[in-house]
Amino acid sequence: MVYTVGEMAKLMNVAPSTLRYYDKEGLLPFVERSRSGIRLFRESDYEWLQIIECLKKSGLSIKDIKRFIYMVMEGDNSLKERLELFAKQREVILSKMHDLQETLDTVNFKCWYYETAVDAGTEEIFKDMTYKDIPEEFRSTGKKLLHLEDNEV
Amino acid sequence: MVYTVGEMAKLMNVAPSTLRYYDKEGLLPFVERSRSGIRLFRESDYEWLQIIECLKKSGLSIKDIKRFIYMVMEGDNSLKERLELFAKQREVILSKMHDLQETLDTVNFKCWYYETAVDAGTEEIFKDMTYKDIPEEFRSTGKKLLHLEDNEV
DNA sequence: ACTTGACTTAAAGTTAGGTTTAACTTGTAA
DNA sequence: TTACAAGTTAAACCTAACTTTAAGTCAAGT
Image 1 (cartoon, each protein chain N blue to C red):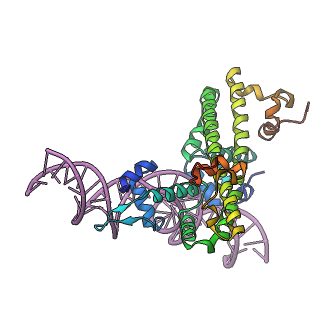
Image 2: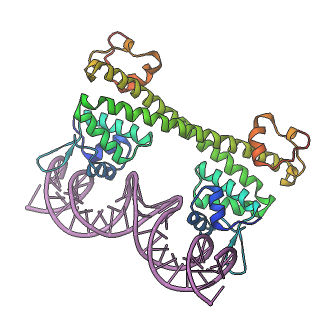
Image 3: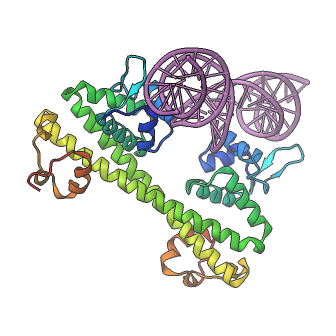
Protein backbone atom coordinates (compact mmCIF):
# COMPACT_ATOMS: atom_id res chain seq x y z
CA MET A 1 0.00 0.00 0.00
CA VAL A 2 1.39 3.38 -1.02
CA TYR A 3 0.01 6.82 -0.28
CA THR A 4 0.27 10.16 -2.06
CA VAL A 5 1.26 13.26 -0.13
CA GLY A 6 -2.39 14.21 0.38
CA GLU A 7 -3.37 10.80 1.69
CA MET A 8 -0.44 10.63 4.07
CA ALA A 9 -1.17 14.16 5.23
CA LYS A 10 -4.67 13.07 6.17
CA LEU A 11 -3.34 10.02 8.02
CA MET A 12 -0.90 12.21 9.96
CA ASN A 13 -3.45 14.97 10.41
CA VAL A 14 -1.23 17.68 8.95
CA ALA A 15 -1.39 19.81 5.79
CA PRO A 16 0.14 18.37 2.60
CA SER A 17 2.32 21.48 2.41
CA THR A 18 3.83 20.49 5.76
CA LEU A 19 5.04 17.15 4.37
CA ARG A 20 6.40 18.88 1.26
CA TYR A 21 8.17 21.35 3.52
CA TYR A 22 9.70 18.53 5.57
CA ASP A 23 10.85 16.89 2.37
CA LYS A 24 12.42 20.12 1.15
CA GLU A 25 14.24 20.47 4.50
CA GLY A 26 15.69 16.99 4.08
CA LEU A 27 13.60 15.20 6.71
CA LEU A 28 12.24 12.62 4.29
CA PRO A 29 15.23 11.18 2.41
CA PHE A 30 13.55 7.76 2.53
CA VAL A 31 10.44 8.72 0.56
CA GLU A 32 10.55 7.37 -3.01
CA ARG A 33 9.06 8.90 -6.13
CA SER A 34 7.09 7.57 -9.08
CA ARG A 35 8.70 7.87 -12.52
CA SER A 36 6.81 11.13 -13.00
CA GLY A 37 8.03 12.59 -9.71
CA ILE A 38 5.08 11.94 -7.40
CA ARG A 39 5.97 11.06 -3.80
CA LEU A 40 5.15 7.49 -2.78
CA PHE A 41 4.77 7.08 0.97
CA ARG A 42 4.98 3.48 2.29
CA GLU A 43 3.95 2.03 5.64
CA SER A 44 7.56 2.23 6.78
CA ASP A 45 7.56 5.92 5.92
CA TYR A 46 4.53 6.34 8.13
CA GLU A 47 6.61 5.02 11.02
CA TRP A 48 9.35 7.53 10.22
CA LEU A 49 6.76 10.29 10.31
CA GLN A 50 5.61 9.14 13.73
CA ILE A 51 9.17 9.40 15.00
CA ILE A 52 9.47 12.87 13.49
CA GLU A 53 6.27 13.88 15.27
CA CYS A 54 7.59 12.62 18.59
CA LEU A 55 10.88 14.46 18.19
CA LYS A 56 9.03 17.62 17.26
CA LYS A 57 6.80 17.35 20.33
CA SER A 58 9.82 16.86 22.53
CA GLY A 59 11.08 20.22 21.27
CA LEU A 60 13.69 19.36 18.63
CA SER A 61 14.10 21.79 15.75
CA ILE A 62 13.75 20.70 12.13
CA LYS A 63 17.54 20.77 11.81
CA ASP A 64 18.05 18.53 14.85
CA ILE A 65 15.45 16.11 13.57
CA LYS A 66 17.27 15.99 10.25
CA ARG A 67 20.51 15.20 12.03
CA PHE A 68 18.81 12.38 13.92
CA ILE A 69 17.35 10.88 10.74
CA TYR A 70 20.77 10.80 9.13
CA MET A 71 22.17 9.18 12.27
CA VAL A 72 19.63 6.39 12.01
CA MET A 73 20.41 5.90 8.35
CA GLU A 74 24.09 5.64 9.23
CA GLY A 75 23.38 2.53 11.29
CA ASP A 76 24.97 1.20 14.46
CA ASN A 77 27.88 3.65 14.35
CA SER A 78 25.64 6.40 15.64
CA LEU A 79 24.00 4.48 18.51
CA LYS A 80 25.89 6.32 21.24
CA GLU A 81 25.21 9.69 19.67
CA ARG A 82 21.51 8.90 19.44
CA LEU A 83 21.43 7.89 23.10
CA GLU A 84 23.06 11.18 24.03
CA LEU A 85 20.49 13.08 21.99
CA PHE A 86 17.59 11.48 23.86
CA ALA A 87 19.29 11.77 27.24
CA LYS A 88 19.78 15.49 26.66
CA GLN A 89 16.21 15.83 25.43
CA ARG A 90 14.93 14.17 28.59
CA GLU A 91 16.56 16.92 30.64
CA VAL A 92 15.00 19.55 28.41
CA ILE A 93 11.54 18.05 28.94
CA LEU A 94 11.98 17.71 32.71
CA SER A 95 13.00 21.33 32.90
CA LYS A 96 9.95 22.36 30.88
CA MET A 97 7.69 20.38 33.19
CA HIS A 98 9.22 22.06 36.20
CA ASP A 99 8.61 25.52 34.75
CA LEU A 100 5.07 24.57 33.82
CA GLN A 101 4.38 23.35 37.35
CA GLU A 102 5.51 26.67 38.78
CA THR A 103 3.27 28.52 36.37
CA LEU A 104 0.37 26.24 37.27
CA ASP A 105 0.89 27.03 40.94
CA THR A 106 0.65 30.72 40.16
CA VAL A 107 -2.41 30.29 37.98
CA ASN A 108 -4.10 28.17 40.66
CA PHE A 109 -3.44 30.90 43.16
CA LYS A 110 -4.88 33.49 40.76
CA CYS A 111 -8.02 31.37 40.36
CA TRP A 112 -8.51 31.31 44.12
CA TYR A 113 -7.78 35.03 44.25
CA TYR A 114 -10.40 35.93 41.65
CA GLU A 115 -12.97 33.49 43.00
CA THR A 116 -12.61 35.22 46.34
CA ALA A 117 -12.78 38.65 44.76
CA VAL A 118 -15.81 37.78 42.63
CA ASP A 119 -17.61 36.47 45.73
CA ALA A 120 -16.79 39.65 47.62
CA GLY A 121 -17.58 41.83 44.61
CA THR A 122 -14.32 43.70 44.99
CA GLU A 123 -10.57 43.31 45.18
CA GLU A 124 -10.62 45.52 48.28
CA ILE A 125 -11.06 42.33 50.29
CA PHE A 126 -7.35 41.59 50.01
CA LYS A 127 -6.38 44.96 51.48
CA ASP A 128 -6.33 43.73 55.07
CA MET A 129 -5.93 40.04 54.52
CA THR A 130 -3.31 38.17 56.49
CA TYR A 131 -1.34 35.03 55.95
CA LYS A 132 -3.82 32.83 57.83
CA ASP A 133 -6.70 33.93 55.55
CA ILE A 134 -5.10 32.22 52.56
CA PRO A 135 -5.97 28.53 52.14
CA GLU A 136 -2.97 26.43 53.01
CA GLU A 137 -2.37 25.12 49.48
CA PHE A 138 -1.89 28.66 48.14
CA ARG A 139 0.14 30.14 50.96
CA SER A 140 3.63 29.70 49.59
CA THR A 141 2.62 31.02 46.16
CA GLY A 142 0.39 33.71 47.65
CA LYS A 143 3.16 35.03 49.84
CA LYS A 144 5.13 35.94 46.73
CA LEU A 145 2.18 37.49 44.92
CA LEU A 146 0.32 39.40 47.58
CA HIS A 147 2.66 41.74 49.43
CA LEU A 148 1.66 40.67 52.88
CA GLU A 149 3.00 42.40 55.93
CA ASP A 150 4.29 39.83 58.35
CA ASN A 151 1.63 40.67 60.91
CA GLU A 152 -0.22 37.62 62.12
CA VAL A 153 1.81 34.93 60.47
CA MET B 1 13.16 54.74 43.70
CA VAL B 2 12.77 54.95 39.91
CA TYR B 3 14.57 52.97 37.23
CA THR B 4 15.40 53.66 33.60
CA VAL B 5 14.59 51.11 30.95
CA GLY B 6 18.11 49.67 31.10
CA GLU B 7 18.06 49.29 34.86
CA MET B 8 14.64 47.67 34.87
CA ALA B 9 15.72 45.38 32.04
CA LYS B 10 18.62 44.19 34.20
CA LEU B 11 16.29 43.60 37.17
CA MET B 12 13.94 41.58 34.98
CA ASN B 13 16.77 39.87 33.16
CA VAL B 14 15.57 40.84 29.69
CA ALA B 15 16.92 43.12 26.96
CA PRO B 16 15.97 46.81 27.13
CA SER B 17 14.54 46.44 23.63
CA THR B 18 12.08 43.90 25.01
CA LEU B 19 10.64 46.40 27.46
CA ARG B 20 10.46 49.04 24.72
CA TYR B 21 8.69 46.50 22.52
CA TYR B 22 6.19 45.71 25.28
CA ASP B 23 5.56 49.41 25.72
CA LYS B 24 4.98 49.86 21.99
CA GLU B 25 2.50 46.96 22.07
CA GLY B 26 0.56 48.69 24.83
CA LEU B 27 1.55 46.38 27.69
CA LEU B 28 2.94 49.18 29.84
CA PRO B 29 0.30 51.94 29.96
CA PHE B 30 1.19 52.51 33.61
CA VAL B 31 4.83 53.51 33.01
CA GLU B 32 5.33 57.26 33.36
CA ARG B 33 7.82 59.47 31.54
CA SER B 34 10.13 62.30 32.54
CA ARG B 35 9.52 65.71 30.97
CA SER B 36 12.07 64.84 28.30
CA GLY B 37 10.40 61.52 27.45
CA ILE B 38 12.50 59.03 29.40
CA ARG B 39 10.59 56.09 30.90
CA LEU B 40 10.42 56.05 34.69
CA PHE B 41 9.80 52.58 36.12
CA ARG B 42 8.57 52.48 39.76
CA GLU B 43 8.44 49.58 42.22
CA SER B 44 4.76 49.10 41.37
CA ASP B 45 5.70 48.81 37.70
CA TYR B 46 8.12 46.04 38.64
CA GLU B 47 5.16 44.13 40.07
CA TRP B 48 3.24 44.63 36.83
CA LEU B 49 6.21 43.24 34.93
CA GLN B 50 6.25 40.15 37.16
CA ILE B 51 2.59 39.55 36.31
CA ILE B 52 3.35 39.97 32.61
CA GLU B 53 6.16 37.44 32.94
CA CYS B 54 3.83 34.93 34.60
CA LEU B 55 1.15 35.37 31.95
CA LYS B 56 3.74 34.96 29.23
CA LYS B 57 5.04 31.75 30.80
CA SER B 58 1.55 30.39 31.06
CA GLY B 59 1.25 30.77 27.30
CA LEU B 60 -0.72 33.99 26.77
CA SER B 61 0.07 36.02 23.67
CA ILE B 62 1.09 39.66 23.89
CA LYS B 63 -2.41 40.65 22.79
CA ASP B 64 -4.09 38.58 25.51
CA ILE B 65 -1.75 40.03 28.11
CA LYS B 66 -2.66 43.50 26.91
CA ARG B 67 -6.35 42.68 27.30
CA PHE B 68 -5.74 41.45 30.83
CA ILE B 69 -3.86 44.61 31.79
CA TYR B 70 -6.72 46.77 30.59
CA MET B 71 -9.13 44.58 32.56
CA VAL B 72 -7.17 45.19 35.74
CA MET B 73 -7.10 48.92 35.08
CA GLU B 74 -10.87 48.86 34.61
CA GLY B 75 -11.27 47.75 38.22
CA ASP B 76 -13.81 45.49 39.87
CA ASN B 77 -16.10 45.38 36.82
CA SER B 78 -13.77 42.91 35.15
CA LEU B 79 -13.30 40.51 38.08
CA LYS B 80 -15.42 37.75 36.60
CA GLU B 81 -13.75 38.08 33.23
CA ARG B 82 -10.33 37.85 34.85
CA LEU B 83 -11.36 34.74 36.74
CA GLU B 84 -12.51 33.16 33.49
CA LEU B 85 -9.21 34.02 31.85
CA PHE B 86 -7.21 32.23 34.54
CA ALA B 87 -9.62 29.28 34.70
CA LYS B 88 -9.23 28.78 30.96
CA GLN B 89 -5.48 29.18 31.19
CA ARG B 90 -5.35 26.50 33.88
CA GLU B 91 -6.91 24.04 31.44
CA VAL B 92 -4.38 25.05 28.78
CA ILE B 93 -1.51 24.38 31.18
CA LEU B 94 -2.91 21.04 32.33
CA SER B 95 -3.24 19.96 28.73
CA LYS B 96 0.34 21.00 28.01
CA MET B 97 1.57 19.01 31.00
CA HIS B 98 -0.31 15.98 29.81
CA ASP B 99 1.25 16.22 26.34
CA LEU B 100 4.67 16.73 27.86
CA GLN B 101 4.25 13.65 30.06
CA GLU B 102 3.43 11.53 27.02
CA THR B 103 6.49 12.83 25.23
CA LEU B 104 8.60 12.14 28.30
CA ASP B 105 7.34 8.54 28.36
CA THR B 106 8.43 8.15 24.76
CA VAL B 107 11.82 9.74 25.36
CA ASN B 108 12.38 7.58 28.44
CA PHE B 109 11.64 4.53 26.36
CA LYS B 110 14.06 5.72 23.69
CA CYS B 111 16.76 6.15 26.32
CA TRP B 112 16.28 2.57 27.48
CA TYR B 113 16.21 1.46 23.86
CA TYR B 114 19.52 3.11 23.00
CA GLU B 115 21.19 2.13 26.26
CA THR B 116 20.34 -1.45 25.41
CA ALA B 117 21.52 -1.05 21.83
CA VAL B 118 24.78 0.64 22.86
CA ASP B 119 25.48 -2.20 25.33
CA ALA B 120 24.84 -4.77 22.63
CA GLY B 121 26.72 -2.77 20.02
CA THR B 122 23.85 -3.10 17.57
CA GLU B 123 20.17 -2.48 17.07
CA GLU B 124 19.87 -6.06 15.81
CA ILE B 125 19.19 -7.03 19.41
CA PHE B 126 15.59 -5.88 19.10
CA LYS B 127 14.92 -8.09 16.09
CA ASP B 128 13.74 -11.04 18.16
CA MET B 129 12.81 -9.34 21.37
CA THR B 130 9.49 -10.11 22.95
CA TYR B 131 7.18 -8.27 25.27
CA LYS B 132 8.69 -9.82 28.42
CA ASP B 133 12.19 -8.57 27.52
CA ILE B 134 11.10 -4.97 27.97
CA PRO B 135 11.37 -3.60 31.52
CA GLU B 136 7.90 -3.23 32.95
CA GLU B 137 7.96 0.57 33.11
CA PHE B 138 8.50 0.83 29.35
CA ARG B 139 6.12 -1.90 28.19
CA SER B 140 3.07 0.17 27.39
CA THR B 141 5.13 2.78 25.54
CA GLY B 142 7.37 0.17 23.95
CA LYS B 143 4.44 -1.77 22.59
CA LYS B 144 3.48 1.21 20.46
CA LEU B 145 7.02 1.90 19.28
CA LEU B 146 8.49 -1.51 18.63
CA HIS B 147 6.22 -3.49 16.35
CA LEU B 148 6.14 -6.58 18.47
CA GLU B 149 4.44 -9.70 17.26
CA ASP B 150 2.07 -10.90 19.94
CA ASN B 151 4.14 -14.02 20.52
CA GLU B 152 4.97 -14.56 24.15
CA VAL B 153 2.96 -11.79 25.69
C1' DA C 1 -10.01 13.70 -26.12
C1' DC C 2 -11.28 16.43 -22.33
C1' DT C 3 -12.21 17.81 -17.74
C1' DT C 4 -10.97 17.92 -13.16
C1' DG C 5 -8.75 17.42 -8.99
C1' DA C 6 -4.42 16.35 -7.04
C1' DC C 7 0.25 16.37 -7.91
C1' DT C 8 4.91 19.16 -8.82
C1' DT C 9 8.30 23.31 -7.94
C1' DA C 10 10.20 27.87 -6.68
C1' DA C 11 9.40 31.78 -4.51
C1' DA C 12 6.92 34.91 -1.84
C1' DG C 13 4.05 35.67 2.27
C1' DT C 14 2.73 34.97 7.29
C1' DT C 15 3.04 35.11 12.40
C1' DA C 16 5.05 35.83 16.85
C1' DG C 17 8.09 37.90 19.52
C1' DG C 18 11.54 40.08 19.57
C1' DT C 19 16.39 42.53 17.93
C1' DT C 20 19.08 45.74 15.25
C1' DT C 21 19.99 49.97 12.95
C1' DA C 22 20.06 54.84 12.08
C1' DA C 23 19.52 59.22 13.37
C1' DC C 24 18.86 62.02 17.05
C1' DT C 25 18.48 63.76 22.20
C1' DT C 26 19.71 63.71 27.23
C1' DG C 27 22.14 63.76 31.43
C1' DT C 28 26.26 63.21 34.15
C1' DA C 29 31.32 63.49 35.00
C1' DA C 30 35.79 65.59 34.04
C1' DT D 1 31.96 72.56 27.48
C1' DT D 2 32.94 68.67 25.79
C1' DA D 3 32.61 63.76 25.92
C1' DC D 4 30.18 59.80 26.13
C1' DA D 5 27.11 56.39 27.75
C1' DA D 6 22.44 55.66 27.66
C1' DG D 7 18.01 57.36 26.47
C1' DT D 8 14.40 58.14 22.34
C1' DT D 9 11.81 56.71 17.77
C1' DA D 10 10.58 54.56 13.36
C1' DA D 11 11.58 51.22 10.50
C1' DA D 12 13.96 47.38 8.91
C1' DC D 13 15.58 42.87 9.97
C1' DC D 14 15.51 38.10 12.08
C1' DT D 15 14.08 33.11 12.92
C1' DA D 16 11.19 29.11 12.89
C1' DA D 17 7.91 26.61 10.89
C1' DC D 18 4.85 26.73 7.95
C1' DT D 19 1.30 28.39 4.20
C1' DT D 20 0.08 30.45 -0.05
C1' DT D 21 0.61 31.54 -4.77
C1' DA D 22 1.71 30.92 -9.51
C1' DA D 23 2.60 28.25 -13.18
C1' DG D 24 2.75 24.06 -14.81
C1' DT D 25 2.16 18.45 -14.98
C1' DC D 26 -0.25 14.08 -14.16
C1' DA D 27 -3.92 10.50 -13.74
C1' DA D 28 -8.61 8.90 -13.62
C1' DG D 29 -13.29 9.09 -15.14
C1' DT D 30 -16.67 10.16 -18.86
